[in-house]
Amino acid sequence: MLENVEVTGSVDIEPSRLTGDLDVRSLTATGSVNISRADAGYFAAKITALEELNFSRCQFTNGGVITCRTRHLSFVECDARQPLTVASLVRDEPAKLISFPSTNLENFVLADIDMTSTMFTSAVGLDRLTVEGEPRFLRSPVMLGASRQVVQDEVVVRSQRKLRLFGKWRAGRWGKLVADTPAVPTDMHKVAAIYRSLRKSREDSKDEPGGADFYYGEMEMRRIAASPISAERWLLTSYWLFAGYALRAWRAFLGLSLTLAVGSLLLYQFGYIKHHAMNIITSGSLLLEIVIGIAKSPSGLTQPGVLVLTVARFLMAAFLAMALVALRSRVKR
Image 1 (cartoon, one colour):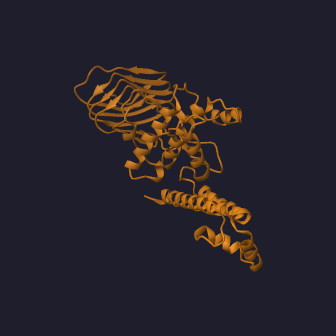
Image 2 (cartoon, rainbow, N blue to C red):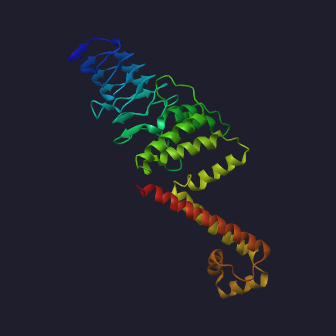
């Protein structure tokens, strides 16, 4: 047991294999605290490391509770066989988690931990990670009036992308969010898998709205990773633009309105037999008949008019369905 230990500078702790529990009642260091090769039963610790707190190759056989205060927290090649809670000592100054390389997160529970700089690449069991309290993730640059929770892995990928259209401007906006810590090389497919695991973790915790941003991030990575000339890229781009992957209701309603407006205009120009069009214009019922025509086929349609009406009906039904799904995803618990 370590109790009321104060260290000026940094300290390295490498305990030999223990047969019992490890209890660190109070450990304070003005530099870094590095704990490596700890293999104990139950691990209880209260640690303040003003610079870094690093756990390397540690086995938490019976789980434990780690309460800490630090600007740089990392777990390298660690494993917890039972629930291990990692919490911030001061809630208003959350410990900043940096990375989990080759660490099994199946039994990790994070409470009030800052994950704005966390790189999730190479972590294991991410879909079983439990995050308690309000998630503290990075927010993306505002795009079409909205931002979302993002992981540092996506920020790194986007900041390194080379695009012909507004490439430097886009990369620059994301580049401002890159953490100061060295970035782990990653790719879009891996980031998509990270978002998929985080989404599953939130959904398993009965928090589907909380997983919506992770689903959005997953779809974004899939869209960007697809070949620019592939059908998948065009389909996902249309899904993003007009519905925000069924998470941005206002885009779906906008698409619904545009479909109605354009469909009505095309019907007016090409959809009616000339004498029938003149009759409805004379009677002053043109707009009413065009609007009703989306739901019910009017008389006097030409072949192009039938095609326009069929396409408009399909698109409006799709936009309406996506808008309802988007609204439901925001209120479902």
